[in-house]
Image 1 (tube, rainbow, N blue to C red):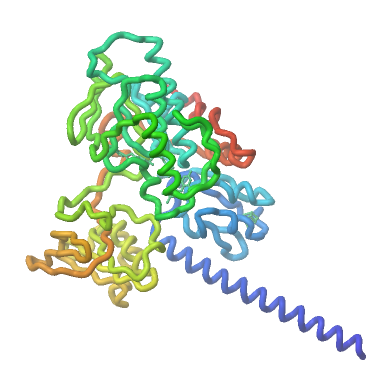
Image 2 (cartoon, rainbow, N blue to C red; image 1 turned 180 degrees about the vertical axis):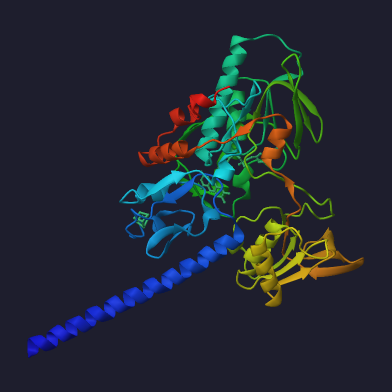
Amino acid sequence: MDSLITYFIGAGIVTIFVYLYLRGLKKKERQWHAAAEKGNLISQGPKAQHPHIDANYCIGCQTCTSVCPEGDVLGMVGGKAAIINGYKCIGHGLCAEACPVGAITMVMASPSVSAEMPRLTPEYETNIADLFIVGELGGLALIKNAVNQGRECVDIIAGRRARSPAATAPEVRDVVIVGAGPAGISASLRAIEKKLNYVTIEQDRVGGTVANYPRQKLVMTTPVEFPMYGKFKKMELSKENLLAFWQKVMQRADFQVRSGEKVEEIKKDATGLFTVTTSKGQYRSRSVVLALGRAGTPRKLGVPGEDLPKVMYRLIEADHYVHKKILVVGGGDSAVEAAMGLAHQVGNRVTLSYRQPAFSRIKERNSNRIEECIRSGKINVIFNSAPVEFRQDSVVLDVSGARREIPNDYVWIFAGGTPPNDFLRKIGVQLGDLDLTDDARRETHQQGSGGSPPAAATTHHFGAALRF
Ligand SMILES: Cc1cc2nc3c(=O)[nH]c(=O)nc-3n(C[C@H](O)[C@H](O)[C@H](O)COP(=O)(O)OP(=O)(O)OC[C@H]3O[C@@H](n4cnc5c(N)ncnc54)[C@H](O)[C@@H]3O)c2cc1C
Ligand code: SF4
C-alpha cells in the first residue's frame, strides 16, 4: 500500500513538472509567434548572409536561439527553430556553429537581393578597370570582411602603381576612397601605409553603419589585421569603444577624411583617369575604391534644425525607444513600418506626418495594419502636412497651410533616397545574380575554427566564371 502511495505521489510530482514545463514552452512559443509578427512588421527579413534552418534535421534543442549576440533573431515555432526577427540578423553565423546536428547553414538573402550584387573579380574590381568595390556593398556583411577587403584592395592598387609608375599631374590622386565605414577606413589607412596619394570622401560621419548602431551595442568581431595598427584581437566590445579605437589609430596615422561630402558621379576618360564629382567639388584619380555599404543615401528635407542629433534617417532598433514623443515623416512602406514598430514599444506616442492626403503607394499588408493602428489610436497620422522646423523639444508642422507645434523627442525622416545599386548602375557598374552562399558558409566555418582572419576567403571572393 505504502509503495502504491509513493508511486502516486511520484507520478503526481512528475505530472506537475511536465505540465509546468509544457505550459512554459507554450507561453514561450506564443511570445516567439508575437515576435515573428512584430519582426514582419518592421522588415522583410535579412539583407545579407543569414542562417537557413533545415527543419528536417532540427531536433528543437533551442541551442541556436541562445547563442545569437543580436538577441531574438531565431525562435522556436512548432517545435523547430525559425527566423523570427530576420532584420536583426547581421550574419555572425554563431547559430550555425552551435547547432549540434548541423541543421543550420549560412546563406545569402533572398534571390532577388543577391541578384543585385555587383559583379567583381577576385581582386574586387568591377567591369570598369581600376574601379573597385569593397565591404558590404560587394555582398558580404561583417566588420572583419570590410576591414580585410579594404586592406587587400589597396594592396592591389599599390602593386599596380608600383608596376606602372607613370608620372601624372600632381592633382591626380592614386586613389579616391568613397565611404568611411570599416571598409573605407581600412582602405584609407592602408593607403597611408603604402604612401599612396589618396583622398577619402564620406557623405555623413566616420564609422559608417557602426556609428549608427544603437548606443552601447555589443559589437562582435574576430581578430583582424588592422592597417597602421597590426593584429586587433578583441572578440567583442562596445560600439563606443570600437569607434574610439579607430579614432585613435586614425589620429596617429593623420588620416584625413572629407566628411559631409557626397560622391554624385564618377566618370572615366579616354586616358584612363577618373573624375569623381562630389557635392563640393571634383577629384581626378587613377583608381577609385567604393566602400559605400548597402544602406544607401537618405534624402534630406533641407528644413531648419534637421542637423539636430535627434533627427534620424534610419531606424535600427525600435525597442531602444520607449516612453518617447516621436515624429515619423513619410508615406512609404519604410515610414509606415517604422511608425508601427515604434508605436509597439511601451509608452511611445507616435505621430506620422505625410504630405499627401492618403497613403497610395504602400503594400496591402502595411495598409491594413496602419489602418488598424490609426483606429486603435496607436498612431496619430496627419495627412497634408510637412515639417517646417525641428526644435530641441518640439517640431513645427505645416498642416494644410497652418502652423502646428507638437512636443517631440525624436524624429525619423523617410523621404526616399538613392539605393547604392541605382548609383552603381548610373556610373556603369554591372550587377548580376551571384550566389554568395559558399562565401557566407566559408566565413562561418573560419570564424568557428579559431577566428583566424579569412584572408584567403576574401581574396578569392568570387568564382573564376565571374571574371571579366
Ligand atoms: C544593427 C547592426 C548591427 C551590426 N552588428 C555587427 C557586429 O556586431 N559585428 C559585425 O562584424 N558586423 C555587424 N554589423 C554589420 C556591419 O556593421 C557592416 O557589415 C559593416 O559596417 C559594413 O562596412 P562597410 O564599410 O562596407 O559599409 P558601411 O559601414 O555601411 O559604411 C559605408 C559608408 O559609405 C558612406 N557613403 C555611402 N554612399 C556615399 C556617397 N555617395 N558618398 C560618400 N559617402 C558615401 C556612408 O555614409 C557610410 O559611412 C551590423 C550591422 C547592423 C545594421
Ligand atoms: S541548434 Fe540546431 S537543432 Fe537545435 S533548435 Fe537550433 S537549428 Fe534546431
